[in-house]
Length: 392
Image 1 (cartoon, rainbow, N blue to C red):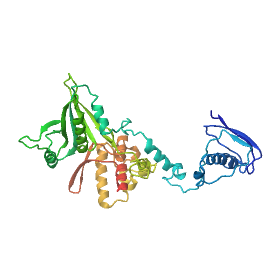
Image 2: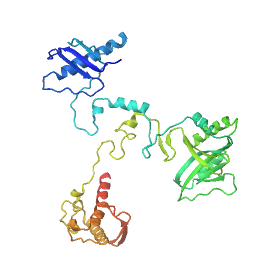
Image 3: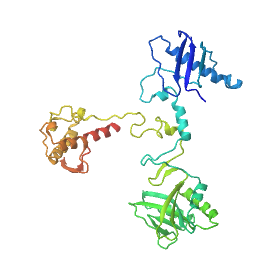
Image 4: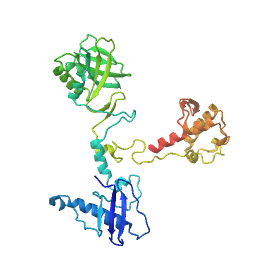
């Protein structure tokens, strides 16, 4: 049974004078004291050195030749000690991509650990996502009640715009008989060709097979599942009708990490998925920096006593004459729509008018004349406009 404490007796390393002390195991312990009082001598030169020395001595002679040999510290005895790890302290330049984990080089090992044993989750729903082998999919389908009718379907086009004549022709040439287009099953051999509206979104799925769950169906089912996975990009849909029911229900399966409800797909986990320096792992909002820059409304309008007509919006003051004229026409329409006044101090404008200037009018369109043009469109807001300019 492991000791509850780490006990040090007679520590005389460096400036220690026969120190006796006990530390609780599996706890965070802080050693404090004045400079030169022996903190490092106790923690590193005694406790860590002895733990590392004992660990190295437990290895084979072949393994020990590759490791640094540590001298036994000047101490009577230490009990309850486990193999020890010491993290080196380094001076570093402030960098948003530098963390304790990267500086101590633990980060690479953490990425390997999480990519090996991590459980993926859907970032939208928080649900766990799983993947299955083709054999597992077959086994799961075979658990349906006997006499269940079902279709093995391979999704080919998902909610995309176009006519997809070439896709339908390729499916027909490959020998498939039926497709499901926008939820309707159609025969590919029918006299009239399938025509889709080119400006609308469509979903096209191949009906790979139609089966009834009975004894002896495994071989045919396995072949159909393999074919459907090949055409469906590692995803398939099973549309089934249970015995003595009229309704059909659909179940999705995938050989990739997938949530069929949200169609979230995650490839095989690798260390790059846990790196904020990789596009695969970085937060899409902060791009892996851990902080987000934004425009401060108080700096955009630094003097609220200044009217909109007199340059209250600081970033707009340096605009060209043409852009300045556009801004004035826009603001005139905006303050009229929100019952404000260009000559009133910004702080005295109605709250919804100030919000419209900074954050936009939403779906509400503004109408104004600029030069010879009649303009009618919503205003995105000064802050969104500046953010777009910054990104570009």
